[in-house]
Image (tube, rainbow, N blue to C red):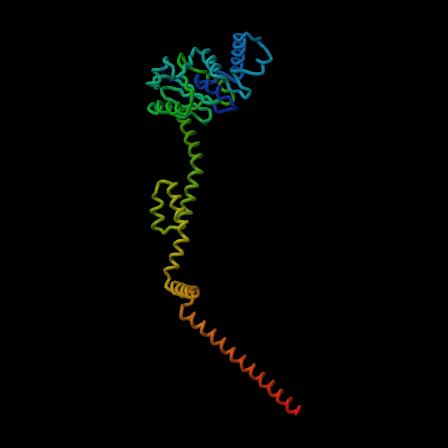
Length: 331
């Protein structure tokens, strides 16, 4: 356990630069800019040489120069490099799920530092002056963690697939803040209250667009509500529920308009008359009407027959007269 106030109560934090999160992680564990990316690269190169020697390969074989197990081309380092860097300061890096670290699994608050890793990102959770902080380089400032939340936070990380390592040993007591080496270009010293203020400011900036969208949804939905409904609607806390209700009200507006039109008596009378006419036009003729049409057709047929007979008889009479005249002339 560390006794007393270190570094005058200041917190050392490094913000993300390229893919140098391993450098940031090591320095926040040590609480000072003790290592640069070149220092870790030298350690990685030394580890590569030792690995090649164990594999009976030349110390600088072409294959070995092109590929490294300890540092990637974009600057990401292996856990072995971090271990070597912290061993320089008499610190041990132990997997949290190992039997040696079992007490830390039960009560992590009794420890001083943890290293967390997932894919290509590293960050440190560190106790400084009796308080726990998350020194993730993706954050603008260290984020305070309560003692009660620490265990739950570590459990959530493990559940999300993070590898967690316990750091034990003699941590550096002080770093000469006033020296020219106090900053490596992406490190900063902060008072705890300054770190809290920066964290709150960043959170408010992130929440501002969400609040603006919520206000816009509120104003838009109130256009479709009465004053009493809008007041009741504004008291609801769930913004998503507000949006859902507003959407349902907007969808039901055409239906309400149709219902209002249907309730108008004049519209009902017009609709009834139109319906009656439509029904009458669509109903087929009755049997009586059909018989009438048949009788009319038959009467017309008989009349035509009579007319034809008269015409034929008249034509026949003319022929008989001509025959009589011809007989008389012959006599």
